[in-house]
Length: 249
Ligand code: IPE
Ligand code: IPE
Ligand code: MG
Image (tube, rainbow, N blue to C red; front, top):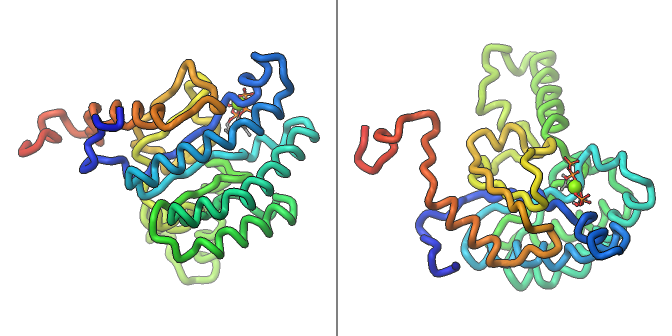
């Protein structure tokens, strides 16, 4: 599969809804948490796979705003797992020249999570390879609201006119500021929905759903398969097919 990838036409930004951990575990009679624990290997695979190919941005949906409504023990287990994983994966991130960042309502995370995240972010800041972004306590609606509040505040302070608000200015205030829009969004677990992920940034993303793969089973070949499919699609951005063909008008 990997040899079928055209390295001159890679998606610049891949985003992943890592779904299906609970079902993966329950399918084998285990508790949902067992699925979360077994998801780390898949995170490593997608990160390494993207880094090796030369993808510039990878955003992983690790915990949504809505996930706070899950049973308390599951939320707690996920937060603990997050702390351990960040700590354990730091050397691998360094080795692969990966720069770690996070988006979301980070203040809602437990203090030890925030600390671990801050430390890993700080330590990988000068890495120049893949930009890995963890979406934590994140939702697309939250992001648009917090950006809108910033704009409203600037208008109130007189540093921005309402008519100056445009795509670029809103974009710059989103948590994803400075990063390109998503080219390819992957979702494991078979559900064909966005689940409040990057709503604005997904505007023209190509969607690739794995109907038969739960996240803990995700490996590099699954990534390659999606990129190959992506490269076979025609992204028209509202234009006609003739217009986007090379040399077309
Ligand atoms: C994704 O797997 C992980 C998180 C949302 C944190 P799920 O826990 O949603 O697993 P399913 O979808 O219930 O199988
Ligand atoms: C989306 O999965 C969130 C993450 C993968 C972190 P969910 O399991 O929460 O999504 P729904 O509830 O099935 O839409
Ligand atoms: Mg799910």
